Image (cartoon, rainbow, N blue to C red; front, side, top):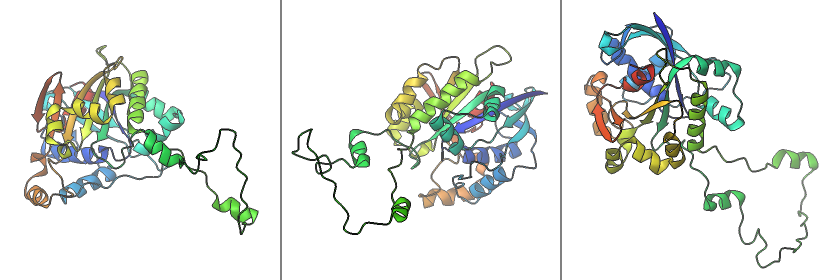
Length: 316
C-alpha cells in the first residue's frame, strides 16, 4: 500500500476544519471520487466538526494554544471512485495560528519542515468574507494606527521646531508607569502575504511525485456561496484578483507546483444567517449538499463531489 501525506494549510478561520468534517459523511456513505477502506477511531476533533454540521451549525473556529498536541489522522483510501490503488492518506494537523507565526517570524521548526518534505501535495484554504482576513495597510489605515494628525505633527511648525515636554499633573510612580504604559502593537500580517509565503514553502519543500510530475496544490476559496453572484460566476481567480491581488499574481508563477483553483461550499449555503436554508439543510442528507467550483483554464464547472480538492492534491 502506498503512503501519501497531504498537508492542509491556511490561516485562522480559513475553513479547514469544516471541510474535513464535511468529508467524513461522504467517506461513510462511500460517495465521491475517494473511497475509504476503513475509518479511523481516534479522530475526536473530526467527529466534533461532523457533529456541529449535522446539527446545522458550522464548527467554531479552532483557537488552540500553539503548544497543544497535534491531532493528525490517517485513512486508507482508493481513488477513481474506489477502483484505484490503495493509498494511506495522512493529514497532519497544523493550526492556522502556527502557520501565521511561522511566516511572521520566518522560522519553521524541523518537525514542520519534515511534514512538508514528506507531503505529496497540499490544499491551501482561504475563506471568503472571513473577519479574520487581514487586508494590507493603506495610508489612511496607517495614519490611524500611528495616530498622526495635524496636532501630533505640530501643524504650522517648521521642521526644526522643538516641543517642550509637558509634565503630568499627577505623575505615576515609576513602577506603576511601567505596568500601564504599552507601545502600539505591530499590525497583523496581511492574509495575502501569508498565502504567498505558504505557497513559497510548498514550492521549496514538497517532494516530487512518484511519477516524476510536479507536486499538486489545490487552492480552495471556502464559503464561496457567500460571494456576490457576479464575482462567483467569474471563478475563484476573479475573487482572488479582487481581494488578494498579490497572491493572485503569485499564482501566475507557481514554480515547480501544479496548482488548480476551487471554490467550495461545504453545505451549499449559509447556516448562520439564512434560517430558511438551515431548515432545508436539516431535512436532507448532508452528503447530498455542498459543492465545488473547479477552474480549468477559462472553463468553470460545478460538481457535487467536495472531495475533488483533496483528490487533486493526491494526484488522482
